[in-house]
Length: 549
Image (cartoon, rainbow, N blue to C red; front, side):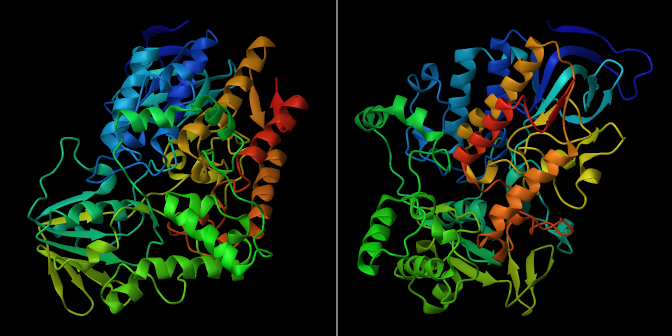
């Protein structure tokens, strides 16, 4: 039962009312909404605290021009039949506005907003051993006292501002992509600069190239993007996509990435070159991530195979770029890193826009950015690139940043940032020793960056729900992963990673985009089936790796 009462005397940082809860969920994206719906079904008192003014998590904050899903729309949904049977996206890969409409549909179906407190940012929490309860503080003064806290802050919750001198001097419009104004920004006909060519940068460049008087793209590492094959969906196409969806939703949890396709096999080494090329051509023609996660797994383990795949990608891309100098920058002869070990983006006309007269590519390896000026960007060759709009597509403190930025104190007074200073260890990417009754989804050492968001929210989320239900039915009040289980899961993740080419690239997968971050694989690379199996083994052994009291 939920109750609200005045804050107790003597509770530091508590200035407003207090929600008394069984479970507090932090974040109203896919993971948070799944938790709220399922916990309410179990009869538990639960609320969501959400920093934004609306639903969607990353799809509330990411409203920059071109923001779009890179999973087929029919699978970028929950598998609950009451939801997908009543909703269709208008495009195969929906934009952020359509995803927001989907969240409104989920809300209307399940009535979730009545238990969501918007514009309420969690800033910290402490655990009281005497009654085994968390006291959670927010920036509004509202506080929650909850038996369990489930953090659903996502893998991209902490934007990273670039460390470039003079950033505050720019007189034009300047936004980080993740902090784009909710009511939009007029950029038509303006001189636009985009710093960064990750997934967000690719989407921005495509959109800005169509409306800018001049677009300057500042690239450090080329993006090995894949063809999206985007298309509008009429009623007939929507009906066709819904055929067999019951089975597809049931089966997607048994695929590596939680989508409608899987790897064709472990190895391609014995397949004749002509046959293998025909397979690549078919995957390329179908588009999306099939060329990445729907081919053969040895692309991640065999350098010779990886190079063959890269060369196929390179030649396909170069066919579209007129200037050979630009082609070498965007699709280098020698791979900048193994193919697929940085998360690819999906593109519609990204490479084509560099043929336009109004688009210019600046390689910051050749001419580094010296500083931001009042009028634009000054590079090391002495050129000042004059701009009206500067967009920072400089990414996030991925995977861990959403958790380590919070002042959540464990039983020894430590924060997660302090506990993970030398690297993350977390059982199943869901719990960490020293933080009892605290669970997190879509975070470090979970499938996260390798899995479709809604599928991961359901797979990992259901394990959290079952654990909480298991405790309630047995009268248990405290759960904590063991330090040994945390370390074993970290080592298991590292063992899989060490057999791949992932350590060969400086990527956010490996924590390399943040200075001082301990180098390690931050996402579980074993795939959803193996992840589910590990959880099942723990449950069968009475939740091995957890201490329940």
